[in-house]
Amino acid sequence: MLAAVADGTAEDVEAAIAAARAGFETWRRVAPLERARLLRRVATILREHAGELAMIDAADCGNPVKEMVGDAMVAAAQMEFFAGFVTEMKGASIPMGPDAVNFSVREPLGVVGRIIPFNHPFMFCAGKSAAPLAAGNTVDRQAAGAGAAVVAASCRAARRRAAARRLQRRAGGGAEVGAALACASRRWPRWR
Image 1 (spheres, helix red, strand yellow):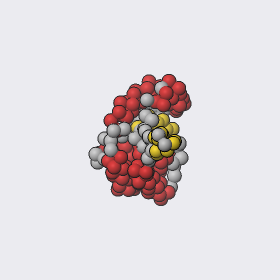
Image 2 (cartoon, rainbow, N blue to C red):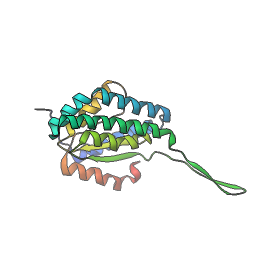
Image 3 (cartoon, rainbow, N blue to C red):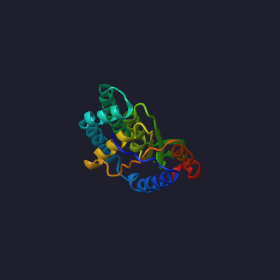
């Protein structure tokens, strides 16, 4: 047996979103350069554990190990790309006449829900999480049954190295969990 991964329920989704909302209040206040540093650290950890994560991903999903090592490198590159983008998220000032200036400010929205497909879960987990995390949002991810093991392992690796104490994982869960995650935005405007 590769791993035991519990099926989640709609109640688990509610609890995970509540935890992500609580974490959002802290994460949104992390200075942009610190967020970028943490995302780069996660990228380093993903590279350091690429072989281990690739083996878990291959065993869980049936893809060739060599391809999964490539996925680990792509996942790390996605984290680094969005880490570099952190300082480029800027507002604007728009002159509206001699006595008026409009300002736009980019702000994090809250919790972003992501459903991770089964075929390349590790790469998609990083790719779907990097941009919202870089922008100051938190992420609630649902991994498919196949693929949940590597998502959990990658979060454990990052937490062990103290790079991202705010990373959470939630077990897979099928249609009930997917529906609960997809419908959550209807109850919480912008998941705030």
